[in-house]
Image 1 (cartoon, rainbow, N blue to C red):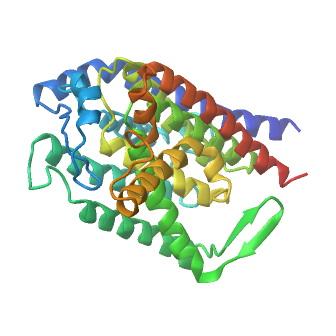
Image 2 (spheres, helix red, strand yellow; image 1 turned 180 degrees about the vertical axis):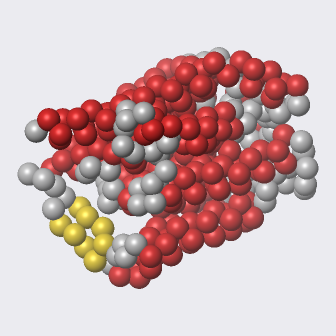
Length: 353
């Protein structure tokens, strides 16, 4: 009994200590990092053209023109802090504080690969965008989609052929889907990455919802005995929470694609590792709704002679346009997101009843 308690204590130290340490690292370095962004002119540009279909978006520009010039690429601070903590994580094991580091072949290799590879993809897109390089002022949509698909396909191949993943679970029922696991994996990872990216349009919105989603996934990982994965989720929560400290309205800096794409893709990978992909739409409910609002808007414009469902899509801009203050949209979406993340957690626990 004492041995079990000791092991649980060490795992909690790993999870809570890593989370707190990452939070402190980001919190203490945020101001200097923000000054660097300003120095190298990595500032947000507000255009009157949609990045999705290249149509004019004067309503969006009128709402957010005041934010032009705010430093962007703040997501670099999140993934750099995660990288630092991961590299330093073996140190506590030498002092007997914990038996695990954040580097685990079975639990964190794939999330780490996804997090950093997609972060670098987003970083390239952000740099091209803020520097006005290329005809599209950033990566072409097809180029970004292709790279995301390729990285997702690598993960799907590893999961299916190297780790023998071929089933998904809902409640107590497991469904073997064979090779269909690969396209499902690609769809979820690409969709999750784009969903967080789409939601990252109001100060604090995406960061707050990300913390809730990763909090639910960390809890599920801990329940399953995946303590290292739970700690990795905690590190992301710590870094994102400290980023949110400076991202709440009015934001001192924005996340950028380098943060939102990486966080979304990693969320999807962790859902597969914890076999919770079928309840991910609950855990990431607002991200799903935001994405569906964009899809519905595009379908409506195409098949209804340009008629729109929302004044502006994604839907958070619609509420902003009809008069809701930005903080009210953010807070209400946070409330819904937290409730749905808790519901997703309950649905996962229901499989054990």
